[in-house]
Image (cartoon, rainbow, N blue to C red):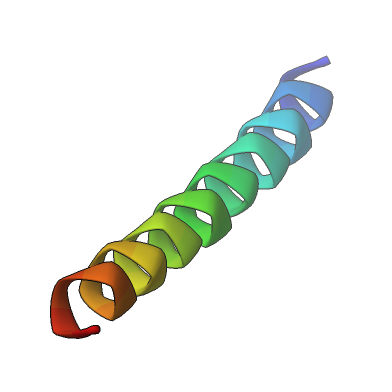
Length: 33
C-alpha cells in the first residue's frame, strides 16, 4: 500500500510539474509577444 501511494504521489507530482512548466511557457510567450 505504501509503494502504491508512492507511485501515485510521483505520478501526480510529475503531472503538476509538467502542467506548471507548460503554464510558465505560455505566460512567458504571452509576455514577450
